[in-house]
Length: 121
Image 1 (tube, helix red, strand yellow):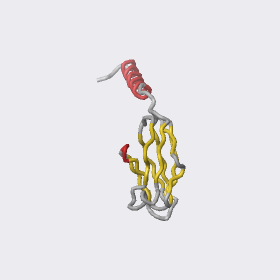
Image 2 (cartoon, rainbow, N blue to C red):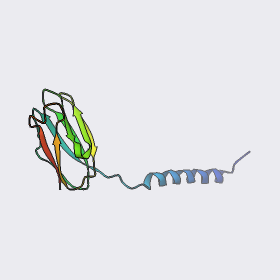
Image 3 (cartoon, helix red, strand yellow):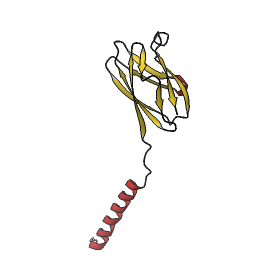
């Protein structure tokens, strides 16, 4: 069975149009506000951590200390653990305005003063 050249050309144009529509029809994804945090004995930098409201926040946590650390925000259900010399990234949000307690959940670190706040403005 032979297909006319016009029918094949039309089919090709329809396939290309469908692919282009699928690629261009979605709304852009929400970009994240990036904040770099250093964890070391027994503090976080920056202190406090300040980010804009109603944004997804990308936390880049680097362990600049000599023991394991994490960054935990219990009220938001967020935790990010990093081994010595390691950097990890996690996202949270979009966040409502407010002040959230941040601490290191490694045993004894919170009690040693490894706390800060996340201020969402």
